[in-house]
Structures are given as C-alpha cells and as structure tokens.
Image (cartoon, rainbow, N blue to C red):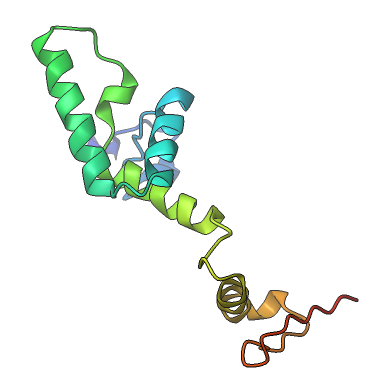
Length: 127
C-alpha cells in the first residue's frame, strides 16, 4: 500500500512492497508445551483449538488481562501438529513396518535396506 507516493512501511523499507504481513504473536513456552502434551495424547487440532476457545471465552467473561497466548489461531496449532508428526520416530507399533515406512520415505538417507518382513528376521547394515 502506498501513502503519498511512498511505501506504507517507510522510505527505507522498499523490500516490503507487495509482501504479506508477517504478524505472528509469539506463543509462550508453557503454551507450546501444553499443546505438545495434547498432541502427544492424540487430540486433534480441532479439539485443541475448541478447548482453547472455551478457556479464552471464560477469561473474557471473567475480565482477565489478555496475553499473547490468547491469540492462538488454529493454523498455529496445525503448524505445531506438523512439527510433532515430523519428530515422531515411531511410525507404526510394529518396528519392522515402522522401519520400512521410514526407509521408503527417506530414500536419500538409506544406504542399504532389505525388507526382511517375510523372513521374520531383522537385518541391519552399517558402514
């Protein structure tokens, strides 16, 4: 947006022209830990967000002071959910299936993989 022929951010900020706003209030570590715990207990993003909204409305009705943790969007929780799924090392309860799933999803990181699930054996190679 231009104001008087100059970028709205000021003369010095020509790089921000036609860029989306990057306003994202930071979540406290306590709130992130709370969300991580709920994700670890297999709550869905929608359930976590609905719980957050209920707590938020209760705080508004009690006229408590607002913090940056009160302005969490469902997208913020979904982002943490994606990070949580990437960090999860156990892809399946069966270790052979989990290993096979990881090996096929990370082909550049695997030097040698032989699927031994039919033999009911486990083979590991290291170099």
